[in-house]
Every structure is written in C-alpha cells, then in structure tokens.
Image (cartoon, rainbow, N blue to C red; front, top):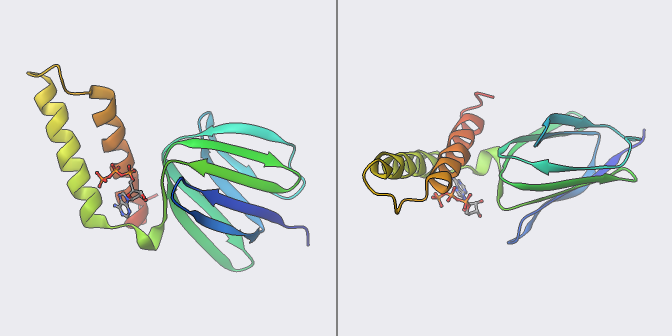
Length: 136
Ligand code: ATP
C-alpha cells in the first residue's frame, strides 16, 4: 500500500521521521488530512493536535506554530515546538496557563505586558492540557 513520509521538525530536534499511512494536522485555515497521492500544498500550522497512523499504531502530538509542506507523498511539519502526547508535562502546562493568565490579568493595569504573547502562551498550554488529558 502507498505510504507517506512524515517529518516533524523543531529548531531543537527531529521528533518524527518515518513512513505513515495518514496525517491530520491543525492548519491555519482549519484541520487538514493527508493520504498518499495528495496534491502538493503549503499551509500554516497553528497550535493544536497532529495525528498520524502507521498500520494499527496511532500517535497524537502537540504542535505549536509553523508551516507544513506536502509534496510527492512527503509531509514536512516545521514548528516552534512539538511533543508527543505521552511526553507532555501536564503540571508544567497548567503552570504555564496560570502564569500567562496572571499576565493577562496584570495587563489591565500595566501596559508593558505583551498581550498577544500572553494569549498565545495560554493557547499553547490549553491545547497541551487537552491533548495530555485526551480531551480532543
Ligand atoms: P513554558 O512556559 O512551560 O515554557 P511555553 O508554551 O512557553 O511553556 P514553548 O515555548 O511552547 O513553551 O516550548 C519550549 C520548549 O519546552 C519546547 O521544547 C517544548 O516542547 C517544551 N515544552 C513546553 N511546555 C511543555 C510541556 N508542558 N510538556 C513538555 N514539554 C514542554
């Protein structure tokens, strides 16, 4: 059966580099699925769940922000950060939510707080919690 080659790369490391049967990714225009034979395209990636399957194996991971390229049955995902669901530190993600929400709260009185940065941190951490707790 035809296969795809999936690569998930961050500035720190290559997290995935293997043949898979299918990929579902959080694109900037909505979730998209890729099967072998898919047309070539580029998409932004937003914080969310990336899923892929290889035979009976299914994997779920968190990806943050970046790009995806689909070409010649190869799916390349280049993102700021990514973790497989089992590697997400739930306590750390919950602390990140508290910290970023604290900054958002402080923003009402202190305009030095970077609002969009704090909102993005909440979004990343909330998705991490959902994936770790299998709520997605
Ligand atoms: P924190 O404030 O906890 O660092 P963050 O959202 O700012 O969270 P990122 O900038 O998205 O963190 O990621 C920085 C690095 O830390 C990446 O390598 C990422 O994979 C890792 N990372 C961040 N949060 C977690 C987590 N909850 N569990 C496992 N790895 C994490």
